[in-house]
Amino acid sequence: MSDLPVAYQKLRARGRELALLGATGGLLGWDQETLLPPKSHGFRAEQSAQVAGIAHRLATAPEVGDWLSTCEAAQPSPESPEAACLTRWRHDYDRATKIPSDLVEENERASGLARSVWVEARKKSDFSSFAPHLEKLLFLARRMADLWGHSGQPYDALLEGYEPGWKTAEVTALFTKLQPRLVAIAEKAFAIPAHPSRKNLSGHYSRLDQEQFLQNLLPKIGFDTAAGRLDTSTHPFCSGLGPHDTRMTTRYDETDFMVSLYGVLHEAGHGLYDQGLPEKELGTPLGQAASLGIHESQSRLWENRVGRSHSFWRAWWSDLARAFPDLNGHSWEHCWRAANAVERSFIRVEADEVTYDLHILLRFQLETRLISGDLKVRDLPAAWNELFQKLLGLKVPDDSRGCLQDIHWSLGGFGYFPTYTLGNLTGSQLWQAAHRNLPNLQASLDRRDYHPLLQWLRQNIHAHGRRYLAGDLIQRATGKPLDPEAHLSILEEKVKDLSS
Ligand code: ZN
Image 1: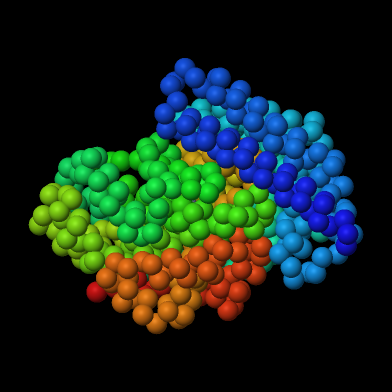
Image 2: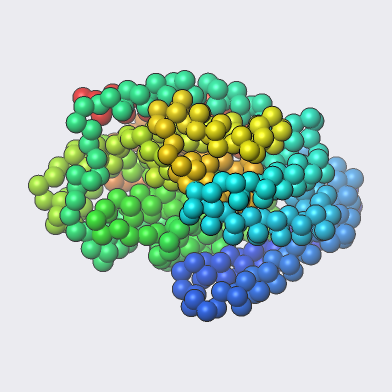
């Protein structure tokens, strides 16, 4: 036991160095997306690679392995926060060191090349030019999965990189339960006569008016604007650089103010999580987010459960009508309907809340089969189109609007997609649990008091950092394992409301 404090303090100090370097890299990335002059991209790429290289060397240095072994031999109490930190540090160290550097480099080269081929292939809807690159990335992903280790299911090892603790079979079981009822909900929603749409709200919503409205909204939902910023980028994101520095971006469409409204509520959900991570744990797993799915549960909760509710539209209507004169002649209820419109569409990132997860179920089924070898790359477009027709009832016209639409596979990101749906299911289950635990929650939301909700999320999710695996964290916060029931019942209720 005597070695634990010294080696443990070294791990903590190394973690802090890595957090500082990570924040520096994150800041370079934020700047690249928001402000960087066009000619500076080459130099920026070199800067970013330099910082990432230093971080990688520090994270994978042999002394880290020695410190870990020393601490593990001292056997801290399994329930202690130190034991949780050691488990997560070991997980990260093993994943980073089990892959030889020539394979890491080969994978980076292959995905760099695949990405540029994919950009062109998507433009021309030319799957055949991308196919050999996808083949290569799948081959490399399987090799890395074998080195990371798995029990017969290589996809498990890939999923572990994004959603530690989840197994392919568990996700499959959840999604199998979700699919038929989600398809039925979507069918019901498509059949609503006089379907409301955001296009009916046509008008001019100036960017300045949108910015002012959002700057007023952010502190009201609890986002600390003195410890974070909202800027503009083509692809919105949120980057939690560290304590008191959370960078969010959005984009503006002057014909549709809901693009920035829902974009910002989504990113602010990520941002509130980042702002709620324990500051004194910077550099240890207790100061990090639990998983991508848990992160996404926060963004979807604020975007969809809060922002798309009756309560939100009623409570904010007079502010919205004041901010956007072109809303005159519309009612809050009409806007609420438009914000919740359900439509068949080809593109995942443009999908509404009901159909979104159908897009994910499709990708999960196909990528698990691609990794297992059960689906051949050349058969991907046909398999995509067939499943798309089955789930969304649309005939895919070309691969640009089909299997070439997402960037993930071109980067070798197999195992990422399910985190979106895990996030949606988790967000709804947390929402129901918060209402159970706080009987006055609805009344406070109705008067635009978001403090009780945020406090509940802070205590039950944010404060724990990465101490528990996502599944255990959900169990602790909601009293049960993750299940699609909460999400499905919320969507069923919503479609019923939209039908009336
Ligand atoms: Zn997100």
